[in-house]
Amino acid sequence: MDTIEIIIFVPIALMLLALAFVILKGKGDGLIAGYNTASKEEQEKYNIKRLRIVVAAMILFVPAMIMVAACFDDITGITLDFLPVLLIGVAVGIILVFTWCKKK
Image 1 (tube, rainbow, N blue to C red):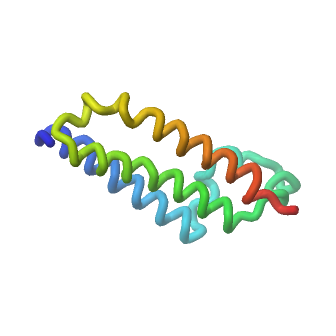
Image 2: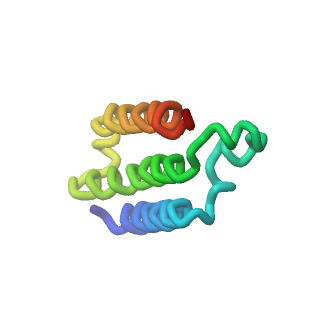
């Protein structure tokens, strides 16, 4: 990993880790896209604790992928190799939001 890649990717990964921590602590509900603009009636349809877990997991998925990619020599050359994994991770997160996080 080159120095320029460390300068770019490590701060991004650290910021995402901090954001996930804020959301898990319950202080970042306003940062969850869609939830913050929903009406109170719409927000009541979701289990906020589960939603925090899923959103934080999706946020932590990105730095995890960055760190896995950093294990290889050329981080920019392998991004297409990780694209299917990222798409599957996002799809799983969306499915969990609309199933596991909904109140019954």
